[in-house]
Every structure is written in structure tokens, then in C-alpha cells.
Length: 448
Image 1 (cartoon, one colour):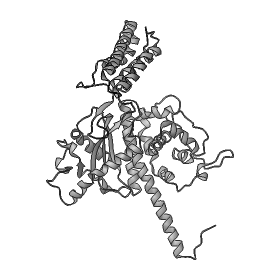
Image 2 (tube, one colour):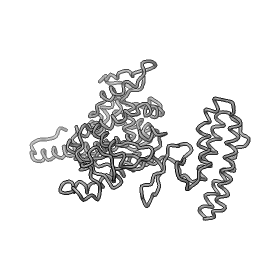
Image 3 (cartoon, rainbow, N blue to C red):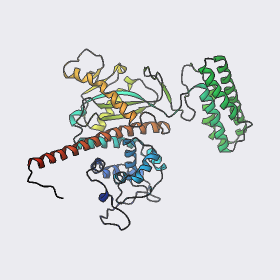
Image 4 (cartoon, rainbow, N blue to C red):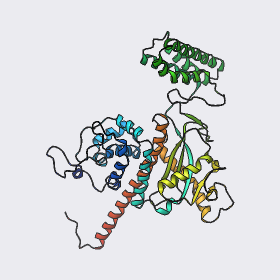
């Protein structure tokens, strides 16, 4: 059910303090809250509310919390804790009076991320609109873009055979306890010791002993799989509940380190993929590939992210360029005149291949195009900021939907951080101009 409309009373309360009386109204976060079109956002997500039940959470509250989380690089728990003692956070989410306790549950953020789904792109479009309205982004900056891909690592440990086998044993035991299946033997203590010794033997290059510990883990995992299948035979509900856990455990038990084809790299996150980007420091990364599109030239407020999208399945970079350009044009409403990419996009499927310039290309590169092609590598620090200051460096959200939401919200947080810095600079320039004006006319005196 839609939440009740919040009515601003503009009146004082004997026991509560109004936020507009205790905060600086010139603060950049207050200015950003005034520039965001909350009514438009509320209208776009209105179909997500049910027609029945109790009133839901206000759209500004939950959307504001998601934006604050990715602007400041906080966790779900962290943004809820900071909201309680930060009046600027409370004003940003639409509160009128200062609140001394968090009014909702932390899990509401997880539910709303799943509920928003594809509509998260609306927040990216709104961040670009706010940047354009504040003067940090110009219309001509949207015509020439740089496109690149990176890896969004998942929150998993490095997947060795011993770790995967141990995780499968623990996962099956956890499922058995949850559904009341009494196992013949859990092997938890044996598996823990074998996984620990396998890592030690591998580090000492004692590979015969290392392989012996792996055989112990595989044997115990196979016993647990067969034991569970015997215990749940003929029980439809249990067979359905154990279908995927047993499938993952069987895959982990059967796969080898250097086999070709699909492999499972995490028991609890089967969507994780092994991606090699040719880095000397990290030859292989485990997560999902993400496509990023930024402005080629530096806008007055910085280099903004125009498009971000998770690409499950580890597709070839060149096969993703067409969709990246089309989605960017749809979000910005401006046709892309030139796109600059690296050599990983050779053989791309762009709709206008003559307007795509690849790093190292000589034919047709001269004048302004040559200067803009040299700026192609400027997208790398943008990706670095999104990983270091945002959540692109490690995704803690569940499933492929969590990967997609994390990529988009990280791009929104990067854009809004640039807008906040731009608003802070504007305020300083205005104050400096006023100070110079008072110095030039000493007859004017500030009110005391």
C-alpha cells in the first residue's frame, strides 16, 4: 500500500527540534536534497506498491538511504547507524524533526533493492540530470564517451579445491540441520583439519601429502551426498529443497583444477565467474564483468559515469559495445557522436563502427580525435574511485540481481559525490566573491 503523504507542519514542537533550525541550510547535502526530483522518483516507483495492506515506507526515505550508502561507501548497517546521529542524513531522507531512533528495519534496504530491480537505472538518469542542472555536466559532454569493462569481485575467498570441498561439507551439514535430516556422520572436524593441512602442504610444496588431504575431503563429501540422498528418498519436499545444494556439491566433488569448461567457484554464490584481465597483480578475478561508460572530456564537475551494467556470462568485450552505446543514449537522451575503447573491443558490433575509435588506431585519427583518443585511459581512475570509494571493489549482495544493483548504485554514488564536491566549490566561490565585494566597499558592514 502507498505510504501516507508527509505533511510539513512548519510549526515548532516543545519536545522535538526542527532539522532546519539545527543544520546549515547551505550545506552541500542539503542543496543536493533540494535538487533531486523526489516527486518524479515517487511517481516512477508507485506501481511497485500493493493496493492492500498497511502503508509502506516512504519512497524518499528508502531511496535516500540507498543514495547515502553509496555516496559515502557505507554498509547497510553503517548507513542506518549514521542516520540516527547525523541530522543531515535525516534531512536528506525527508525528516522534519530530529529522530533519536531508526524508525524501520535494516532489512528493508535489502527488500527494496530486490523490489526496485530494473528501475534503479532511474536513479542513474536522475543523478545525471542533477549534475546537468547544477552546471557540473554540460550537454556537449554527453556526445563523446569512453567505454571500458572491469571486474566486480564477489565477497568470496580465493577458491582452492580444499576450500571448496570444505565449504560444500559445511553447507550440506547446515542444510541437513535446517530440515531435520539426521546424518550418519557430519565429518566436520575431519574436514576442517584436512582443509587446513592441505593448505599447509601446498605452501610447503609437498604435493603428494596435499593430494592425500584432497582425497580425504572428496571421500567424506561423497559419503555425505549419498547419505542425504538415502535419507530424503521419496520425500518430495526434501528432495526439492536439496536439489541445488546436492547439485553444487556433486559439481565441486567432480571438478578438477585444470579442467576446461564450466566450473563452480563458490558453494554459496554459484554465479561467480573466473575472469582474467591480463593484470600482473591479479591474473584471475572472481566475480562478474561490468561495463562502464564515462564522458571522454572532463566536465566542469569531473568525469561522470553515464552507464553501468553487469554482464553475467563473461561475454567478449566487443560483443557488448552495441548495447552499451544504446543504453547510454537512452539514459542521456543524446546521440553519441564518438566512442573510444581499448584494444579488447576489436571486432565490435557497434551500430556505427566508423564512429568508434580503438586505442592504437592510426587510420582516421587526427586533430581533435587524436587528442580525445589519448584521453581514453582517463576512465581507469574513474573505475579506481568506484572501487576504492564505492562498492565496486567487492560486491556483498546476493545473486546476479545483487551484482546488477551494486554496479548501478555504485555509478550513482560516484556521480553524486562529484555533484557534492561541485556544490561545495560553488559555495566557496560565492562566499569569496561576497568577501571581495565587502572589502572593495568598506562602507558596508555585516549585520552583527
